Length: 424
Ligand SMILES: *Cc1c(COP(=O)(O)O)cnc(C)c1O
Ligand SMILES: [Zn+2]
Image (tube, rainbow, N blue to C red; front, side):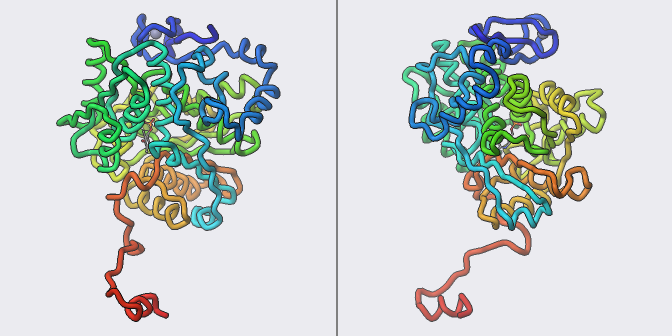
């Protein structure tokens, strides 16, 4: 075995094949701890690993054609490839658009578009790892609470596995119709709960504690391993160059934890030689992590999350708070900010108009970039990668913003009318 389950607080080790989400000794979060020395030794060090990952780029060989399983050796080395459930996922574009760079006054801005995954959000990366592990363990039922994208991904990945049933708990009326349609189409048992996400999260934890139901929220440490691949793939796309900044939206804080874990391991393995800074951005309507940051992380703040266009991050008690806090503290110079509704919608519109259709949650990250540029925390010449977490098409009800809003113009079915409408 190359990996164990390690408690992030007391360092207690657990057997990775045990179904467990929290430390038996102190009840804190667990992470998959890899034997990095051994992995490095077995594969000949950082240079050889880079070469291996480069050789797989563009490969048609399953599952190495996936943007997650290309990195199998550093994701879940103990998972037999025969248990991998892959669509494939990942291999998402890293966009660089001059008009968008100009709008954000940033000399080198890349948008990593995780909306290009099979269910149109980054959750597929975590779910290919989580569902593969569920299959490996021989589970018959998987479940999650969701603000919409986790449920779509869980439903999609479970749908491909014989004998695996998926159940999803959704806060009724608080997710987009497109996200709901996904869970239904993939055939998951879809429970619309009369409560918010945090209530759904509590219920699904109680459910999985008392019944043989495998929990696939991001407190499941195996999901984090798949999500690590976002950072690795960005670095590979940049020719193994580390950008100055990653900017990422934060809800339950699993993704920022995964980004940090992947980069720390990449440095330990010699894949990269330095760490970037990380800017974790929340919506003001659901800003507990930001509040904790403002208090120097002396206490863990929770809030009752209010409605926001960034509905995927409407979370008042982030489950992965402790992991995310460690990332912000470990990556020197990292910051947390919260942005308002107008700011996030305006930022989303800028990306959309630049031809990169992102979701409002990604708008939060872009608005965070704008704020940090204005503050001078991020310099104009610094290289920035913004993680766009889902596709704009999943959130069609989030209206175009303000006076610049683009609307369909009714026109008669006559060439003259069309010519006149075009001002020709
Ligand atoms: C889940 C999700 C997030 C937040 O990720 P966390 O890991 O919960 O912090 C952001 N954007 C979108 C679109 C999501 O689906
Ligand atoms: Zn512990």
